[in-house]
Amino acid sequence: MAAEIVNNNYNSGNRSIESAIERIRLPISQQQKTVFVCNGCCCGHEEKGNPSVNNLLFMRLLNGEKNLKIEQPYCLGPCREANVIKVNVKDNNAGTHPRDRDKNYWFRRINTEQDVKDVAEFVKNPRNLSSNLRDKQMWFR
Image (cartoon, rainbow, N blue to C red; front, side, top):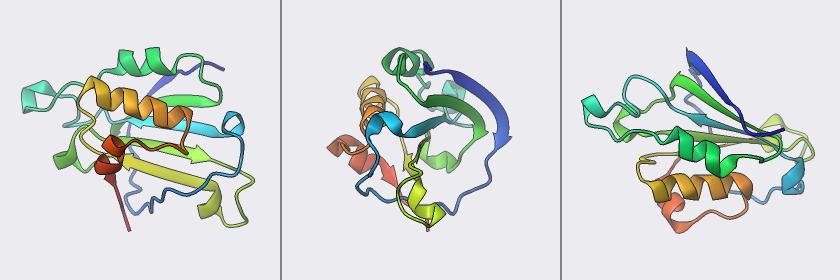
């Protein structure tokens, strides 16, 4: 299953996500991953002073990646941190609590081509987080 873009014009409404970089137990090829590329009121809107989001680069870098879906929800928030990306990794063998099996990683200010490349590499191998993305990671409690 190759990467595909799904454009959902809705607000996910879930802003109390805890994110943690932890060891993922399943082999990477068995994980289900979703990349949410904000396409809302601020992210990617150059007329509001924000850099555009390079969706074509995401597609090119993630083409052929198994168990991956790319979605474009209307707004992920927080808008002051545009451009916002959320990566969800589902690992059904990672413990008994749903929080252990469903990890969300939030990144802010994904504004350059290098940022997009770093996110794509992280999606391919969530065990490796570049220092660039580590600085851009957001934490919600």
